[in-house]
Amino acid sequence: MSGGVDVELNAVSVSIEAAAGTFTGLLGPNGSGKSTLLRTIYRSRRPATGTVLVDGRDVWCVSTGVAARLTAVVAQEGSSDFDFTVREMVEMGRNPHKRFMQRDTVDDEVIVAQSLNLVGLESFAERTFATLSGGEKQRVLLARCLAQQAPLLVLDEPTNHLDVRAQFELLDLIGALAVTTVAALHDLNLAARYCDRVVVLDRGRVVASGVPVEVLTEELIPEVFGVRCRCELSEAGDRVDLRMIGSVAGGSRAGVS
Image 1 (cartoon, rainbow, N blue to C red):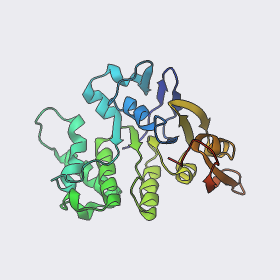
Image 2: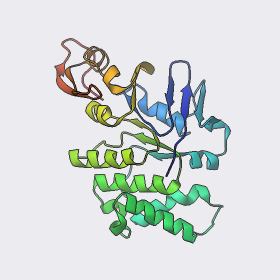
Image 3: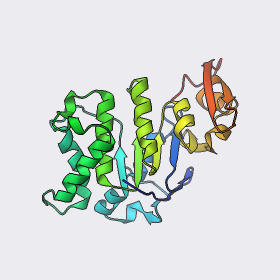
């Protein structure tokens, strides 16, 4: 996976843009619309109004194959009982580039091997997917996206259910790709650390967007997430660290999503 594309989504209540090669994080409480918004980008749910443009092309006006060559997806983890090897899982990423029933080529094999190497799982190729840890599974799914060679990567809560080390390892891998990435994230500090821009959603609407240091403030977080916090800027002023203190007394929000 290399390069990147511009992404633009316009609807009645939501308008976002992701410049080529940037990492954009979607933040918001449970039910704010993060996953729904992502589904409109990767053609799982057609928007009632508006358009989704990937490099200027409306994803709902191209064929399924073309859309799959534009966008690769790591959705929220579903069943882990796949009876496939790691290699077979990653090989599925080559399907958008093949005709029906076309066999793997030497180029396909090379791309799959390179993708496994990039995520550090080349020695896991013959392991069964279901036997892996949560972090390992997410890396396999990322390798499948790499094999797909799409210029846009869409992630829905990629760090969900991962331990702290696995979260950092996965996001370090994604950050090193230099590919346009749009991700729904649960952890605000991870978003502040890894995202070039963040978009905050609340009840299906964008309430703030911009660079993390400007958006994730002591005023916005209690209002949207119902949590009191302290925001500390780095000496250079280019990064913010958040310390959650507790829920807002009498607030309608129960926690952070």
